[in-house]
Structure formats: structure tokens, C-alpha cells
Length: 405
Image 1 (tube, helix red, strand yellow):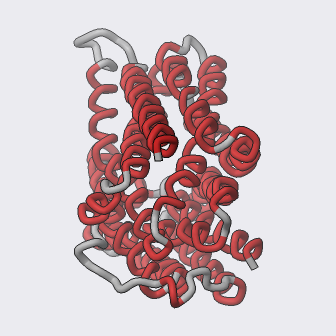
Image 2 (image 1 turned 180 degrees about the vertical axis):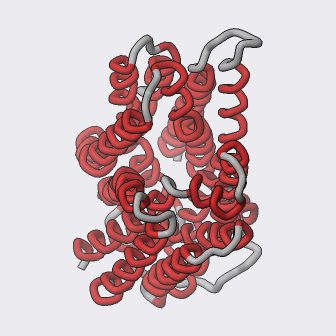
């Protein structure tokens, strides 16, 4: 049952990420169509749409996680995926920009379902084997991240709204597949009542702060993901300005990095955790992020950028290892709460990161100051160095506390 559930969970996570990616290539042209404005204003509106999505995920990931702790994983996963599909269908018919904003608001709420998906791992898999399963879900998400935009770009050639319809169909197929194949992982005896004072990002973080290992890992995750916003926010602009990349080359680099993450998270993380342990895997793999970002910052050619990307995929093993370390410290009836806290932490960086990284890129990419398009990656390297330090200190203190006890 566990193996079948893992396949279904991986499919749901893949569909979530692929659905998001499907609509990315056509968003600029659709916004222009709806507003009648140029690409510069379309980019501004697109930024606010991303902000809306990230803000809703930040606020509602703990709610989705708390609901899954109360009603079980299966109904929450299937309901959110079904509503996400309906939302994509409505956005396909959007007559105005306001309609798109409502759609992104709903998508952000429903897209927080991976908090419940990750909770299923803690429900049904032994603590010492959870890292591999978390890695599998991460690899499925990375695969969706790679294939979604590629498919959306191809479909989008025949109409701006077709990728939304494809995303809706994909969600419907996911619901049907999950309905017949997914089995509930949270027993009724292990469920807890839904508490709105706990099931929000602030209440959840207060709860997590009571456990030093968990709050330390969450702090490291915040710094890691904030650093990663440099790639998500300025990658295309950086490559175009510094190396003259075409959209095709930009797309290939994104696909390459996504493929590398599939390998490191989905394949290698479980093996490394089994061989070296979660603590060593987390700290050593994360340390590779610092030289990776420095290579990207100072790269003289696209080939060197690719080398930096290969090194930068190694930290993909850190996140599953940290999840394996955190989940046994949380009560069985609060695993959704933990995953909601993780999801909110990541979403918060998606709110803060883009304006910080794009602002730094703009400051060093014009003729008024030093020309250094790689500046955001230097900041990212510093943030990653802080993340490595926070994680190492957290794990060292935990080891010392465990030894003392």
C-alpha cells in the first residue's frame, strides 16, 4: 500500500508543479491581451500575480496542513486538486485581469496541498526511511517544474488559454487516479481537532519554536530558499545580459537544472542518507551551494555556468535529509502542521526574494554604476553560508543535548 501511495503522491506533486509551469510561458501574452498594454506593464502585473500566489500559499499552507490533520490526507489532497483544476478552467475563460487575480488567489490556496502530501510520508514510513520518500516527492516536483513550461510553451503556440485548459485536464486526471488508487494514511485515532489559532503561519511557527531542532531547520530553510530566489528571479535577465542567451538557451538551462534536481532529490538523496546518515547528508550537501553561487556570479562563459549548476544541484539532497530529521520530533497528529510551517516558510521567501534580487540585479546592470550582473548570486552565496552555519550549529546543539540526556 505504501509503494502505491508513494506513486500516487508523486503524481499529485508532479501535477501541482506541472500545472503551475504550464501557464508560465503564456502569462505575458495573456496579460497583454487582457490589458492592451505593453510588455513592460505586463511584467509588472505578472509580478503582482506571483506575489498574490505566494502570499496565499504563505497564509494557507498551515490551514491545509491543519485540515489534513483533522480530516485525513486523502480528502484534503483530492479536494484541493479538484478545486485547483476548476480554478484553471475558470482562468482559461478569464475576461479581465481582475479575473486572473482571483484565479491566482485561489490557486495559491489550493496549491498549498503539498503540505498534506508530505505529511503522508510521516504517517506511513519509518523515520529512518523518510528521507528517500521525501526526496522522491521533491524529484517529482522538479520533474513537473521541467516538463510543465516546456509543454505549456508548445501548447501556447496555438492559443494563450490552451495551457490553462491542459492544466485543468491534468488536475482532473490526477483526481481520478488518486480517487481509485490512494489510500488514507492517517488513522482516525491519530487525528486532532482543527484549531484556527494553530493553523496559521504565525501560530504554527510559535508551536515549532518550542522544538529547537525544528525551528533551527526552518531558519536554515528560510535562508536557503531566499538565496534560491536569485535564480528564480533574475536567471533569464542575467543570461541574456551577460551571455546573450536566447529564450531557447534559457529554457534549456532551466530544464537541465530541473533534471539535475530530479536526480539528486529523487534518486541520490535516499541513498546518501542511508549510507552517511541524515545529519551528514544535510550539512555536507548544503555546503556545495556556496561555491555554486560564487561560480555563477563570476562565470566568464555559459560552460562555466553549467559547471556551477551541476555543483548547485548537490544541495538538493539537503531538504529531504532535514525533513527526515524534523518529522520524528513532531507528534503524529501534527505532521500536517509541520509541513504547513515548511510550506509557509518557503512561500515567505517567494514574497521577499524577487524584489530584493531583481532590485540588486538592476542596480548592477545599468550604466550608472559598476557592471556586475552576477551581484544577486554573491548575495545568495552569503545567505547560503549563513544557512550552512545555522544548520550546523542547530544539529551540533541537538547532538550535544541528546548526549547529555
